[in-house]
Length: 471
Image (cartoon, rainbow, N blue to C red; front, side, top):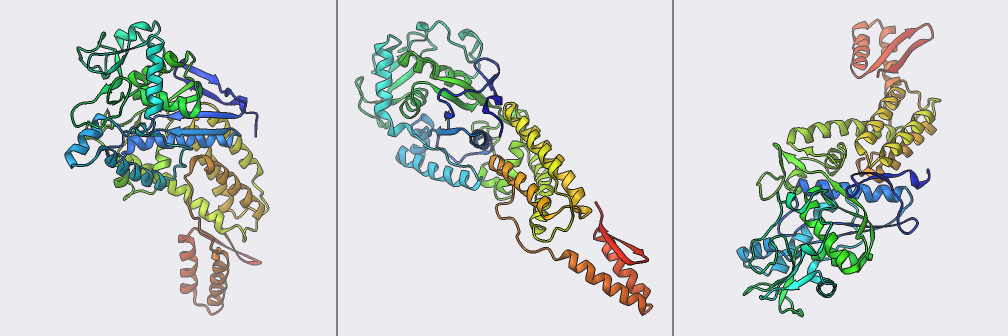
């Protein structure tokens, strides 16, 4: 494997690709913002989950030791409201959907993160960070016991978006609240309302604000500065901008060196979202498509751009993947019966190089998959002409399985039955030869035509009938 310094990642902070060098040698700390657990995850969530699963896998493939965290927001207005509708305790509702989340991602073949911290289990760490922010002069307590971050104390707000504060209003969660000194101040700690879930704090009973949980848990589990912070690009503002403010106000150090954001999954020119009602749950889609087909669909597009979702688009991806699976199954079947003399070194070497070149260029899975299908086309030609040796089959399978450590799109259990097709063809040719000797030419032609329909070409020579598979 080549030296890891060749990996380049687009950094949302700098707005350009940068050479990836972790803070601590080959050790990578990566924090990815997770979901608010008040319902089942949909395909938009799945895209982000699969993208960062792919990124973590590729970093490990390139030799890095990755510590990957993804949080759950398990205390939130949406959770409180949904729990009230169902007559449930909010944390019981969160627990239910966390269990269903794991069921869904396990079925998608997602390798679990190293930890999944939750806001409700890190209240002490959250309170400690809020207090540090206040002590450092960036936070203030309001009359009702809430605590807010004072954006006026920060001179470079907007570094991640590359915009000024006044230009970042669209899509922001800006609450009109007379307790705030500035409309863009945001809650670090929310004073408890009657009947709401709450915890004791120095400012009275309350619960965490939306942004502070990620800053506190990132700090608690990974440290003051991490290598990669990720999530959907809909989180850039205000969530990630505010995380930066909080963490740097508390620690006086950068929160993350690289910011990675995936583009949104779109349905009819709008972001897939529960609030828009244009979503498809992972559970429903898995009733129609395999996990590998869903992963292949997601990885067929570059992670940073938008991706258009429709049942037709997913079916088109599934059809492409079936061609790959057919070739893989044929290779598996010929592991012990291949009789050619081609070891396929050149196509395999070219694929490995193209795969790594693509992935080293900002995890370009789309280009890597193009290289994969170029390999498949070359291999299918060799299979059709029966030119691959056993070693050649082994070399191609090794390359495909190596790639699949990153993508997870090959069949989970490939067929291992022995391929008897060659022996069957030879037997049918013997039957055809016997029919010709008996002058039963109509039946002999029926055998020939039937084999031709199956892609087997018969050539009669002075030495007898020869056959080959058509491409």
